[in-house]
Length: 207
Picture 1 (cartoon, rainbow, N blue to C red):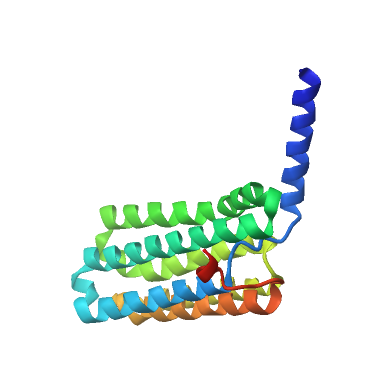
Picture 2: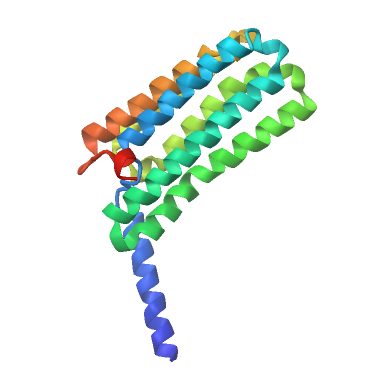
């Protein structure tokens, strides 16, 4: 019985090692393009509903947290579907590694948002820039399992985030300072996967 457990442990370690050296193909270009569209739609909602977001920070945060939640659900569904199809027996390990790479950025964004709104609400205009920088760091963290040109996507979010911070006032809460960076950024990510990842297909339709 002990030898069986040892053998199963060896197999598990081999699977983890294989997963660490395999390019993750769970992100589909169609899925990422859809999340870019969701960001642009959220920007339209903000522009029509809020107008001056600086006077409605809670509503601004609600719109974009909702946008992030919907995008995460769409991305997660696509990841599971594609991973099971393209990674077969390694799908669970690949999904776990993908989540582990991006999770610290998500946790940092959530905690930073909560602390800023609770203890420094007057500085809420920093949120769009900080969100974009943190998201860019999450992309960089994931690049070891993705096509190398994906680093350009991380750089895009870092630069747009710094541009928002450079505004140094409530203009950074404008709808398009969130909608355009995320809309273009997700479209760029979709383009990278379409051009550089093999066996790309329309995961939205099959998922």
